[in-house]
Image (tube, rainbow, N blue to C red; front, side, top):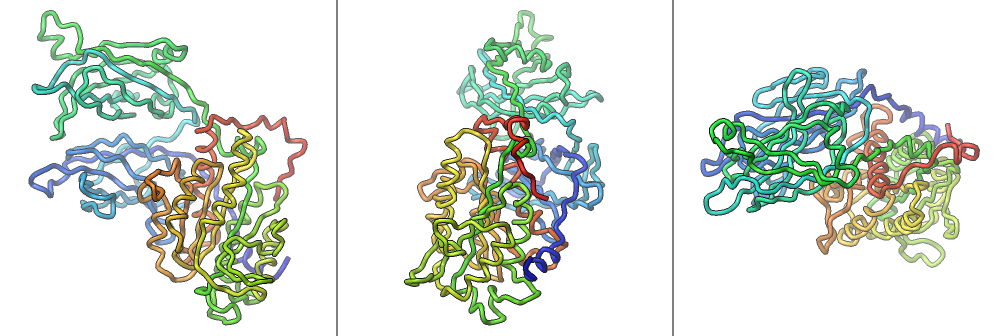
Length: 541
């Protein structure tokens, strides 16, 4: 093992901390102040978690229009670590229809707490109500398709604008909002979009638990008119699994008492109920899925002359540079999920021998027919050996390397098996110059078994890079096509310069297991049975 590799690995002290349990977290608000006298706020809550002094966004709720007392249907699912103080921050925004996301929204306030303070209970802070619940371990989801017919008309000059809410009735008789459908405008016979919800959220895994379903007529002022309700158990809903419809009368209790000939306020129909077995990341790994790890290194001139100690590519015998630290941190984790431990390593933005033309996807070992390196140590040595042989140049184009890995991922996709998932680690010191092509490449890659991790090295302004990470809105191609799923994680290395060991690896790889699971589940691809391959599989340690 080379000194520089050993130094990097030791300085990072790679380890993992076991997750004690997974927790679902819900949020509601009461009495939000009206800043605009002419309209009510359109609230949205952003959940952030503190990591090494930085508040990083975890997820955000939906936007509820014209509402001062919103109950959000969005459920946050977080890992709970007993041995860590996990600090949470809830930021409340007013996002009117004229605003473009959180950046231009009105900030209404924030509340901070720890996981321990919230605990596994319902608690109120100022005008926020937080609820947490431990997951039961049942990861299955259910897909439901509802419609209705002959709903009561609540509008004078048009038909009702109905939406459906589903509540779980808890053991203490409280009601927990599970899902809220979209609103179907001007329609007494709505067909709502199919939605997916975990069995744990829906009924705590108890098929006999009572659910309450309520139908409302949406009003722009937030004062939605109640149409009717009904109660059902999930075991009743399962009747729609074999192609049959299950239906309930939608009853308005007040009308039932007051109106002599009252029958109902419409019929709600469940057209489809489908239980989806949600396989875990480990299910796929144990089923033989290999993580194909590729690294791409920025060799543009802005890094500085590698012979100069101020260069980001300067090689010190015992002090690894930021490129090496990031490479080792992420690579050490990924290599344990790849049996042959052969990693393609590419460079971009340099003039390379023999003709010294600029290349944006050259093999760091200069073997274009076989760019693979034997383990992370070999990647490190290939990186060190290539530096004296190339001329740092530019520009910073990363679309070619994304397209190269996407080509391999596309070939894997056509096998329709969960055998190879590709992770591309891009290490770069500056803002990319081919943003339009990169957006196009990422949108294309979002359909493939592939994730992209970008680590920003040095002190450049990386604010424009955040748009590639879908956390701040949906990334779209120049033609307007949205990504199918969020596959990009961008992290500036400087945020982790003084962090605890392995913090960088933990941050950039945190989303990968869910990305792997989301891809294969969305394609309906199940993991293979371990017995099919375990005799030939070799695990790394």
